Length: 138
Length: 292
Image 1 (cartoon, rainbow over the protein chains, first blue to last red):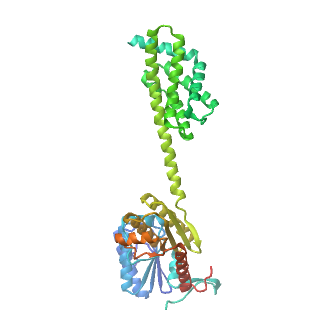
Image 2 (image 1 turned 45 degrees about the horizontal axis):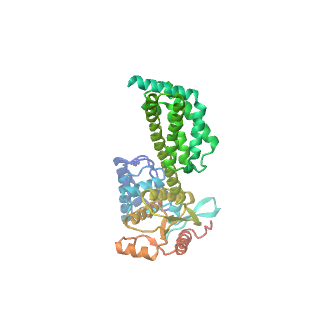
């Protein structure tokens, strides 16, 4: 696979955290391609954390929920921790009403807090032009 | 029968046309004489209502509609009767007084017809006609009254729903929802929506649900609480339930409801302490320099 086949979902690397986000509804092929690329990137980049931002998703059905759960399990097997960030209130309510629990999936309010949970934090004074400072987890 | 009815109708119409003012004045007096009205509606308002109703009745009869349908089909008549009943419903006049008020127009009308009719034989068909005409007005008035009351009840329960579920910010990144009253599906929905919205707005890390004001916790209520907690967790915040009184703790244990995955505290104060600890831990663990 030469070109990224994740359906146009970019995966960025910040330190040893991979940052990605779901943009719109996932279909089967995109989901498979996304899972494949993400797991490959985790192992090739030696990532310790994966941040998946879902703040653009207006609908999360059982399929997307299962994909997220599977991704979490796969990443954990590869030694990385997954945080799903930015779920919208209506989405959370729908998931709860459908009885879908994202078992084992860590959540965060937004990407910023997810990054903080991964050990990345904003410093008050911008030092050396950098916006953030990365502290590896102990 | 047809001709007798037509003659009666003719007679009533002409009486209404010629004695409109006397009839409406008399009607106002009859209503004022009723003790149950209790000054809820002023005399001036009664006069206005009477004039409107009498002229609506006259134009309805002039249109040549069947007697039974004058009230239901003639728009002006329908509106006037509805307005009269709606006004009384809003002022808290009793339903009996409301329909009696409309029905007492019968008396005023009959008296006027009697004054103008010498023949006893002519009086009876007129009385029957007036009865048929105004009984439906009485029924309509009652119906509108009930509708008016139901509207008030609906609005109040909606207000209660909004008033009873405020989300307050207790501390930096700590929100609380004091729940008062029984927790049903509709309220859970409102609480959940408000809470999740507030969590997103304030970027809160911990939400405290205080159930001091919830009288009983059964399996359904526990289910609703669990749903709310799960939704909060999906958003990436944590949830503490506080205000569990001893009897409630006993019920929960006896019913075998499993709340072990949820952090619970006896009082709101304890829960706040716990919440502050949780937020401090989150801040100091990950961002020791960040003192926002």
